[in-house]
Amino acid sequence: MKIPVIILSGFLGSGKTTLLLSLLKESKVRGLNPGVVMNELGKRDVDGYILQEHTGTTVTKLLDGCVCCSRKEDLADSLLVLLRGRPDAIYIELTGVANPEEIAKTLQETALQERVELHFTITLLDAENALEYNSRLSSDKQLVRTLRKQLSTADLIVVNKSDLVEPETLWRIEKGVRKQNSEAEIVYTHYSEINLSPILSGIIPRKIIAPAPQRAPQTFKGATLKQMNSEQGATAVKERQEEPHASFSQVTAITLTIPQAGTTMPSKERIEAFFQEWGDNLLRAKGHILLSEQEPVQLVQYAGMRTSWEASRYPGMPYVVFIGINLDEELLADRWNALFAP
Image 1 (spheres, rainbow, N blue to C red):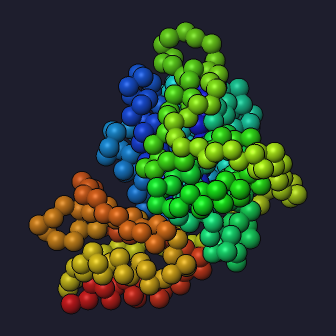
Image 2 (cartoon, rainbow, N blue to C red; image 1 turned 90 degrees about the vertical axis):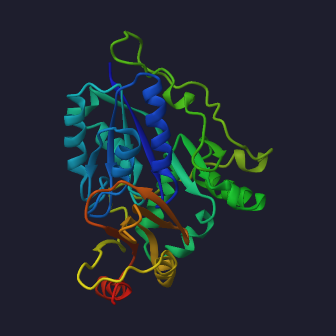
């Protein structure tokens, strides 16, 4: 029996890791043994550590590149290693700038096609920022094309953080989604909370003999917009380019550590202001920071002009990964180090 693969896609900061956490917890309840592959654009692992800290799940981490292009061969190798552990399902969380269509192609390669099958592709959107992506990212046409592919290839589109915007914004988001995908179900939620049963339907522990998993009717828990009749018949737009291409051209990931000698730790407010300074150029920042010896290490996450903090047991050297459009690494590092100057 082929192992079902579930792909989690969506732009930076849309809530993929939160959804994956829920999937892993539900898998444990169901007695499933999942395999997890997590792709990070930066050189340091953030999201994989979050998963391990909260669920104890062993995560295969592919860092410093995108598995749909620069690290595509590594994905196939990682999946083959995972299969040795006889998982009941495999979850792949993509970096926010990955094209899930290329991942689906990887699953069809000779070494994998008889052993795995694509079960579900889920794309998450950040309701606060989804309508601005095209304008904010217009300088990187490859990335804009990738974001459209994230929509057009999805079986389910989760519009996350929908509680933070007005209903009119949700209508506009659905209109934009339907231009790319006329068939996927769209659900509106916050904290990535959806009914997981349709996704996991038919996936049971391998020790129980059963037919291959089949998708259940899509009855996801979440708000739905009423009577979008004018949009339901829209035809999905297909890209004209047939040849594979890089999923982005101007996005960079820069990892910076915390200066140690003569360090004065800035406040949370100063760090948040630092993130804001870079405007639209900074798309995402995440990492672990020790603000004082009297406090636990803090997991800091910045996306969509919002910053969140959470206590963490991270044991390593503090760091932050910055992901953005045309970031000047030297200037970013100089300004960052200046934050900690006595």
